[in-house]
Length: 253
Length: 327
Ligand SMILES: Nc1ncnc2c1ncn2[C@@H]1O[C@H](COP(=O)(O)OP(=O)(O)O)[C@@H](O)[C@H]1O
Ligand SMILES: [Mg+2]
Image 1 (cartoon, rainbow over the protein chains, first blue to last red):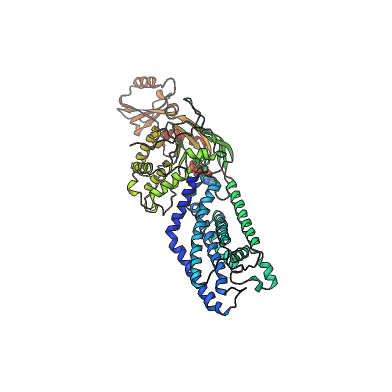
Image 2: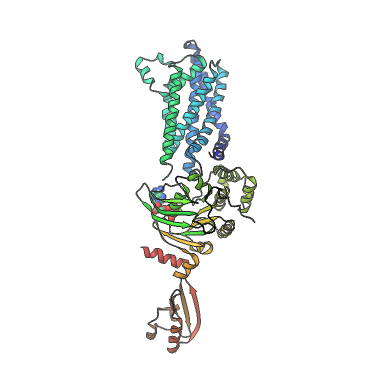
């Protein structure tokens, strides 16, 4: 195991994070605050409680997930896309490091940044609404697993992307609908049956539902199924990443 | 100034003794790019430990492709490369630990500082931080006063130095320099040559590609010529110059001629300088140069000689001849 290399990649990425932390933090904090003002205070005051939880608090886990997903996919993809784009990837490819070490360095840093910002959003949310965490350990588990899986997912996008447009297409076009239709702002039993069935094919539903259960013990799906889905998603991302490096897909000629 | 200390060979490597196996062995290497283009057509090359090998070849010859395969950046289509006895694909950790690479392109992270990017390279190669060594390398490359400068503020020549510093930061045993002096000014080129000399003195094996023939002539021990994916020859520099070296004898005449005299037609002569001189091409490798006979024949013709000079053909001529003959 080339521990020094992992440390170097991780530290390099975290240095980049520090340089851009303010802008990375400000935007999600502002948008989350707006969500709470609009949905929590303005509209939420007219919305009845959902399964005994005030609407403002009900949407908090989903909003944290939205930020976490965006951050992790963004950081994970950019971290590897950029060296590919500038050509500095040559150094990673010619260093005595294995796939696993490269992934741990980049994905670890992306997940760390996601978790830092996610925590800041959680703190922001608690300024607006009362948040209780019924199962802190499970909450942390969901938090970390989601951060790691989606950073890895972002990493794959970064490898796959040929240009900045491709780099942004999934975070911009795919993630928001999944999050908004994944029960972040409502309970899916409020939907007609057909759309309830469709929602079950949305992986983000499981994330948000399980995450929310760890706060309020209310869920659209069994939290253990949620957890299993998150783990399965992580496993799938790991498998694809391993394949990418074995074949050199889009990394080596 | 002292060059960076050579990295120790890991103790569990087979020890070579004095009659050493080549440090880099390239066997029958082929590369087909995804486009279908064949960049390497079965290249074989042995590189001896401690030597300076210059790979000379025009643009597109396959130099960068070959280096990239040895370093792990490009996957080979066929053939095999070993470094210090280890396969570069299967045993990549062992080989990449001792290989340094200074790439042809000036690719650097715009927003990093000089010292950070150099330290990063060392870490990537699994080495513990060593600020003293980094300082020494940066000083040696005249980069020390720029250590906190962001890379995007550096000139092309400075960036080239940074790339070299990065490669030296992990104390490689085998150093690949891919066109290190392309587009750099004369001062830096001279400095680079001196650096190569110093590194060699510490036991580093150096492979550099270039299309500047004078560069190969200046610093290499051996010269390989590559063109269109094939190695045309690999020779000791001195032997190469001697073997293929042509010499030219120029005889300045007291009175100009309008044509080469009939009696001298047996010699490979040309009229030079508007008839002011006769130019004689001869092979230094030949048993007899024919100079004695030529001078005697000239005297017989009653030609009065003003001056005589000889000139050895350069590596450039050899190169042009070799690559040209391919066409
Ligand atoms: N990624 C690639 N895809 C297709 N062809 C390539 C690629 N890289 C290099 N080539 C081609 O391979 C040949 C050798 O290139 P290269 O190894 O860079 O030569 P050199 O370094 O000697 O100038 C060139 O004709 C080049 O166009
Ligand atoms: Mg090249």
